[in-house]
Image (cartoon, rainbow, N blue to C red; front, side):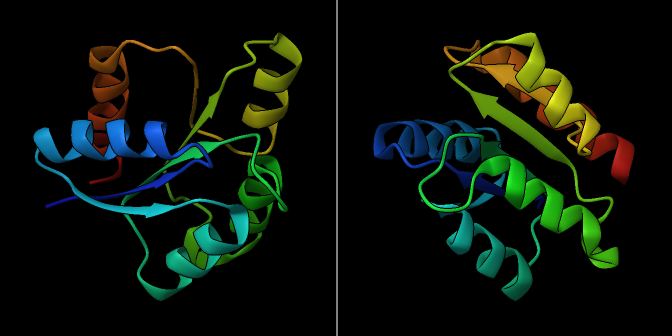
Length: 123
């Protein structure tokens, strides 16, 4: 069973993504900020990360950048989540090594399709 880490500071979004991923058959871990995300990933690396850009403390961009510098996590699939669909943010995320980018509100089916496609690529 693939393990997905959901990182967002909004409890409602974490709950809905956690439910969505569990319903799709994934094991789910959660984190509410960048520090917690980094420690969860180092403790028990997930198969994929759903990472909000706007987090308290360390931003999602910073989390992404740090993960890409660690050889063990350089290829960890990461989908950035954001409420801001600006092209500049999308380009920054992809330049830093994000595998995909989803703007809120998003279609749950489209998000699941992206998650499954990325997990299939890495298997």
